[in-house]
Length: 208
Ligand SMILES: [Mg+2]
Image 1: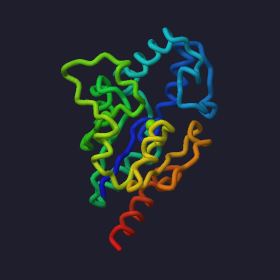
Image 2 (image 1 turned 45 degrees about the vertical axis):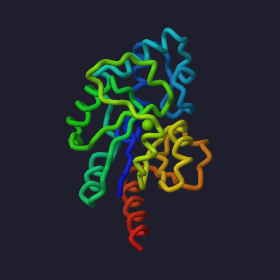
Image 3 (image 1 turned 180 degrees about the horizontal axis):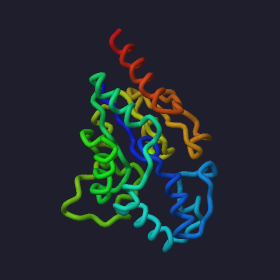
Image 4 (image 1 turned 30 degrees about the vertical axis):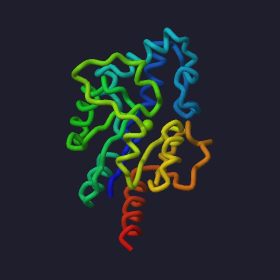
């Protein structure tokens, strides 16, 4: 099966790290469990100038390499690959974050998985581009890849995935998606053991 796996807050603990960064660098104290929105400008009460600085800092190679791994993510990715699934990392990060992203994946032992940069949040233009960056795909281009399963946490990405009826969507439980109303193709998962189980169950059903 072709499997789409999001990166931030699916493979690594991005929001918790950004809470720490917001406190250290911007004197904004918000607990991870209180991150109820995906809009970080709102969450941390940042003005536009602060948000630009926040965005640049959060995508710096230093920050990107510091995010802790999500529990069970590495073992889960390896289990999916070992079962013969074609697993791709599909991130809404800007393509300019490629170096830091690949460095993190290599250090986590996940360097063999391909990474696709997709403008999931309609903000690709907020970031400077360089000729060395990999391409950024549109969500239409992404849909054409026809994933059997997608794992994501962000409500904005889920809104896109709701229109992919042939894709089984696993919603990684996080405080900012707790109030999200699931579309018929979606199911919540609370961790990687459940993701591996669901992919395997989906695969068994397809083979019937
Ligand atoms: Mg995410």
